[in-house]
Image 1 (cartoon, helix red, strand yellow):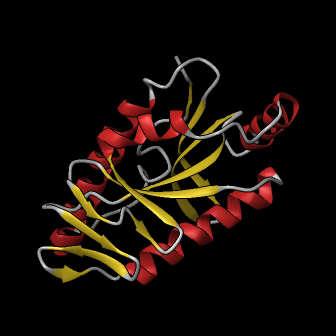
Image 2 (image 1 turned 135 degrees about the vertical axis):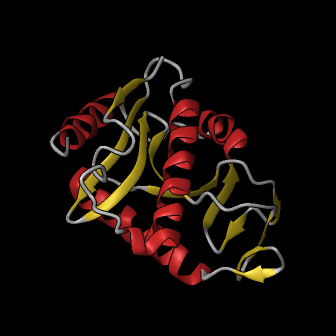
Length: 177
């Protein structure tokens, strides 16, 4: 089993959600459920993987990071309802384009922040926990997966890090806890 570090919701648990913003509060809870769904799936990764859940990095929330000798993967979770259609230019749900440029930019920006800590390339991945993902499965170079495809996808990645580099990355990421 993977080594699990951090608990989903821990960096956001102190956030105050005013009653007047029920929609905002509901989307927070929906997002939290999506992150928990993915955390449960990541627990099934085999020995040799380290999974970091819900990290606060320079004021931004990192949903998950999965690390092994196969690489470093920043996993951004979006818990939208309905099917998701991916095209090179965007993500669509319910026939409407989501603000994918901001989603993709967010994923790459967060990956860059993790990369600065790890001193190693980081691959962002956008995951929709319960949605069926149709189309290209990518937005530009950003892989887009559903929750059931995530673990098999991670296990299919080619080896990217030496054992020494992997240990060094884990040590650096552990400082974020």
